[in-house]
Image (cartoon, rainbow, N blue to C red; front, top):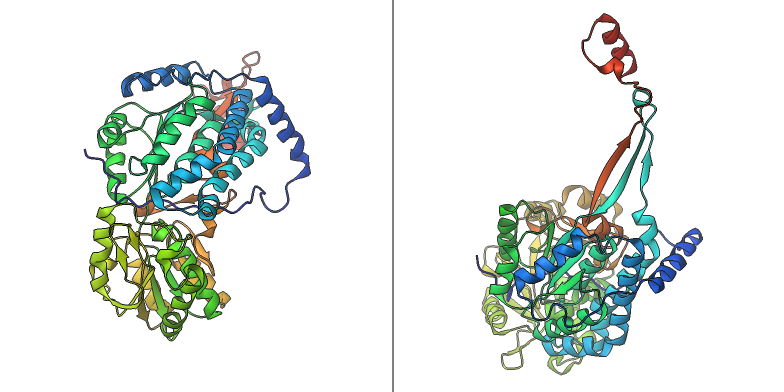
Length: 509
């Protein structure tokens, strides 16, 4: 097995500050939040920065396996304390995180806050608010034939889990699953991407200073380390990255019968029919060119119905200029390509269409201009693999049916978008397009909400997370039934089965 996520495609989550669920926060949950805060203050975490520093992969996994067996991370007060410490880490070292993101990806401070740090903070706050509610057992009424008896479903931690993060959103996509795993009471090994070295080094340094070494550890390194980690026994593996690497992770997990969550990618289509053209262009440009197009749910290509292509070719260059100026290379708000291999791949795509705007690049500075292509052949290389960069092809289609058929002929994407003001088309699109998520009139923002699940379907991934959905991903919903033996009401169910028992069973079941 090889591991190389240098060109992996990863999950994007934009930073909307929405700790609410279904509108305003229910006032009756406020005491739960206060209780969780109080619990966090009562628990003293065993924070020893050097505890696992000199351990190898096998020793680190064994160290945390001991914590999982001793159920160190299971008590509610411990979970609350870990979340509080996590929150302190994000707050106290905000400047360090911003600097690392700028070094690795050229992210501006505002974009880094929006798409990385705010997302993690909101996830922590949401988990703190609802932790007690999420942990509560749900009692179920037992059928009359089994009375007297009681039953319940209670979330139980999975045990020891591995979270492997990507390079394109190296804080957001790595740490949000960790928040979910901690809230669910698991012990966690964190593997940052080696292709975001500044962020990886920072997380490796900070996590042991804030979180309990018995429950959380960071293992940094390259392909050899990732491969060794995948050879260990886990209770769950959470991976964000490319489909190619996802297959390798899935194969390794299958050898150990380990369940997985795979947050992958794919070519996310945007079908454009009608609308306020300047607004449509701005929303497409924002979704596509944030993080220099290195976003797994970014619109990968546009299927333009009728005159929509002409309108987009006119309005997209203006939207790009409004965002980044006439020379995006000079914009402090425009990111950079992660490495030379990605630059070479993107440059190769320029020959696959006619440029509407963009196409300039600087290899030394890892700059690639926001680019729109027209007259693109659907069989060309740019339309075969996820672009994962700032190139947006526009393909003309006659109608929405043709667009839906085009999408259906390709692997299921992580997201699909429709821009139209016609409610009937909204319904048709939702009914006939299979994707991890759907956006109507907007791109990428759905993944920034804690009360919506984020995940793929088919080739774009397995499972989902964010908020309660992430808590459930890292939990076993364990049923328990209890029935007294003082009075054996099951005697009628025991053999031998004569006429009387058969008749009784038929009546009560």
